[in-house]
Amino acid sequence: METGGPSRGPSRGPGALSLDSSTDSEGEERLRRREEREEEETRAVASSPDGRYLKFCVELGRGSFKTVSRGLDTVTTMEVAWCELQTSRLSTEERHRFQEEIQMLKGLQHPNIVRFYDSWKCHVQGQKVLILVTELMTSGTLKTVFFFKVEVRVIAVPASSAPVERVFSHGGVIM
Image 1 (cartoon, helix red, strand yellow):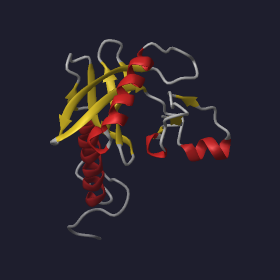
Image 2: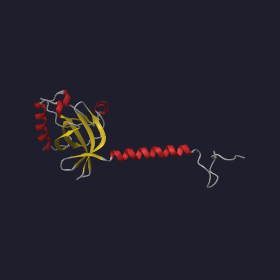
Image 3: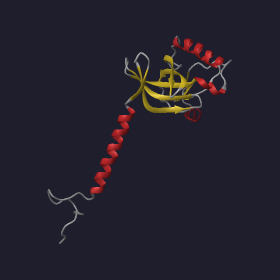
Image 4: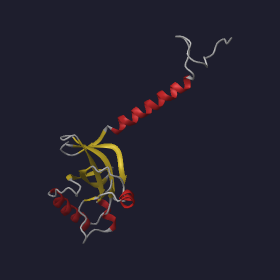
């Protein structure tokens, strides 16, 4: 007959301990960490000047000139892509071309072109950036497109002026 210590067998009454109390505390710790992560991912870290678009702490992609985060359109409640383009790395001519392309994109609506919603200039961590808010595409990566022949939607890349640095991957979208 055993005396003292936790029960190693099946539960034998209301006072019996679980198989391993450390398993319970590990599960609680995992649950607590997951809840903290979910809370962090749903906390807005930035907003558009008019407050319509929110940026969340969920990075979807990163390139040499651009970082893409998950965002939200508070009017439609649709998720969007919040793209931060580091304009300090672009020449004055390239910045001017981007501004012209943005104006053109505002008027485009086509089922095979990523929808463009809004843009503005601001400073992020002391750097000049251009924020682009576009439709969120979650269809994969360029690797997926090339190996599995996934249909691609393109957002304006002028053939005459697009240096290699301006071709970005955004979910299965070439920007």
